[in-house]
Length: 193
Image 1: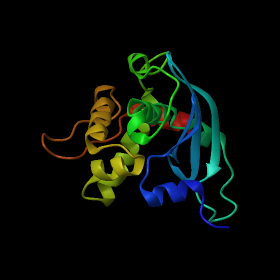
Image 2: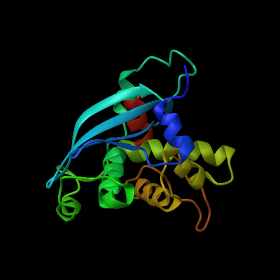
Image 3: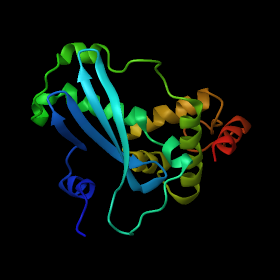
């Protein structure tokens, strides 16, 4: 069967994108909690910013075959915000990536995404739950969690602090890793599982 395009790009260490046309770009990331799938976002680029016009779920690898069945929870886990971040990275340095676009990049940067900004509580609750699990098994839970989701450790620290400020994760002793899920976080996670 050979390797998939996702595996090939990862082996080369390249950014996960493909230019389809002068105003269409595809970006992809692994499905959080289900790394056997890639979530592929197709974006139309205009001077008003990126517009997600297509979302697909494809097997990351040909092994095992067939991959697990897609569920409603898996669709809900699609990292839409992460895909928007990725397309903004490609467009912000289009020349560096060798991408020829038919949009004004400066205008694009001013309006990176239409609609409401911010992430929902469930995003932070899921990260907090994974962090708690990694606390039990690893010595560098923040770094490990950042690598798993393809964020920088600094971004992951910010996300965990946001989880604490939203009342989803308790604060550990000063200067130490730790914390516990709050009742609010447990309720959110139970409602979406």
